[in-house]
Length: 499
Image (tube, rainbow, N blue to C red):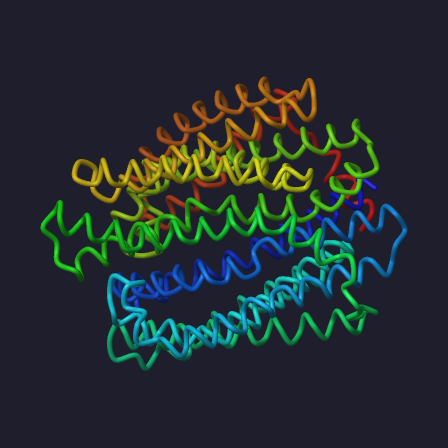
């Protein structure tokens, strides 16, 4: 069973890494084609759309997955189909009337955006609200059936469709707004693609739409807290999209275009780099969550404890490897990817956010798998409040860095509260020593990387600095972690032997 988990995690991670690489490539193309202002407008539209998409379906995939795991534990096959059908019914009940209402009242949507030019672009995405919500249910069915390979392939192909069409469409863009509009059409087509392929696969593999029966009530009970938390995340991002440019204009005397450009640099360029671990954490969560839920409902406390400890340590391991890379090479990465020094500066200065961010992400998924959705919702609100306070109080002092400080505060609060609750759920969890060792290795690797980069930068360009120093930092960190027995090669050996 462990070998299957390792293999599934490896598959999801590889596909997710390729997907993120495509997204980074696309960001580079967007940055050079439609500029920071175009990215800012594009990002604002996606942020507002994400609010509605999240409200409609964000809690459904993991809930469908958990209900399927519960039914599997009880040997109820028909209950698994009913859980999927309940998810589809729930999303259609919400998305169809909301999409129609938004389209009919599109002229009154100006209050949602800091720039009214975003309205027409936003409307393009409305059909995707329905299609992507149904795809989210299909995604949950893949997780519940532990079909991680088709899930990973569809996710990758969806991103590939968006990137390929986006690159083609924006070539003829006349200005930033036209470029953002064309890029949005590519997003919509990618939503259509993933919807068609996922539903077809579900049916071909024996999936059925049946009477949801008794699955609707538990689905709503479990999914609503998760949906509320993720909707609040999207609302928070939309609030930041409006509030931060406004405060930058007020505090720094910037024009609307200048504020949008600065927002685009921070949110559209730097934050995606800092969120690289999210794809890796997501890969772990996707594979571990169904197994953890099944063990939780079967009352296998030892296996639950084992899964929780391994997941937390994996998150710390990822942060330990990546922080030195971003700290040492942040400037070079920003310059190489976007030809924008400020984006790299933000990445470098804020790289240590990765520790609380990785822990918060994995522990939230773990707790949701253990029927603690209401607690994680409360913890999210406390972290979100801290973020907004930081933005409002610090923008006039720190500029766009107020958002990064707020992001760090949010993750610190969430991760601390999540770990406290997990300590009550699973007694004697062992991760503190691992965390301390990871932080020590991170500091040593940052020092080593900075010294190496200082020497290498005298002789080569930014690209070659990245090529030389990135693997050196990773190998340095991995070597120390291996010496401290913080990871072994046994999972890799098992994976190779199985394949």
